Image 1 (tube, rainbow, N blue to C red):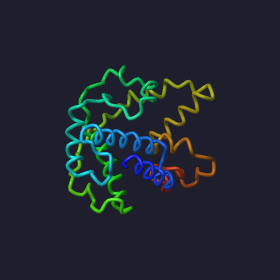
Image 2 (image 1 turned 135 degrees about the vertical axis):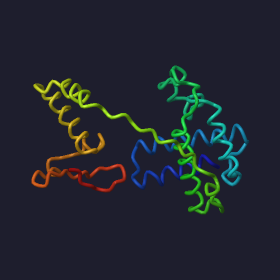
Image 3 (image 1 turned 90 degrees about the vertical axis):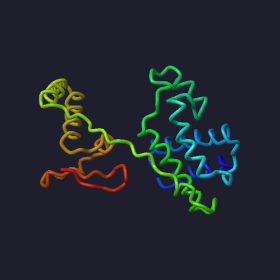
Image 4 (image 1 turned 90 degrees about the horizontal axis):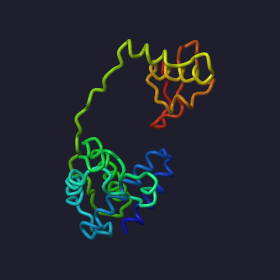
Length: 205
């Protein structure tokens, strides 16, 4: 059963210490895919999944629109996707790429675990989204941003410092919030980031 294998896959991901955000994303995307296989093709057994199902799912994602299907009815009552302004709008290529990449990770795990005898993801092309250049803040906009902090208060000065640190070093918010005093090397103008997205320590300057 696909749902049984999904539970085993998620247990394996948890044992590899993947982030909570990644685990939630994997679980949501894969449950939506499994629901699609069951409702659209009557497929509930992992042995019956074919590469064409993945190709057809890509077309299905384009047609169905955003937030029109949910993976968990209980959380949907809290998140209320039916109230979103962009509900039903076309899914972006970036989101589609993330969906298909997650499904391929699952299928390759099934192959490595010898649950299926063929790498189903191998012959299915990726969706390559166009890279969008993010607009940079102008010098005046940066000036206005930092003037908005009330640095006479503890919280204002803290937020000003965090913002400057992120801007000057390029570290992520989560990485910044994990910094402790021993990570800061003033003599070398460097900060050690220990809790990174890929779990590899690195220095920023």
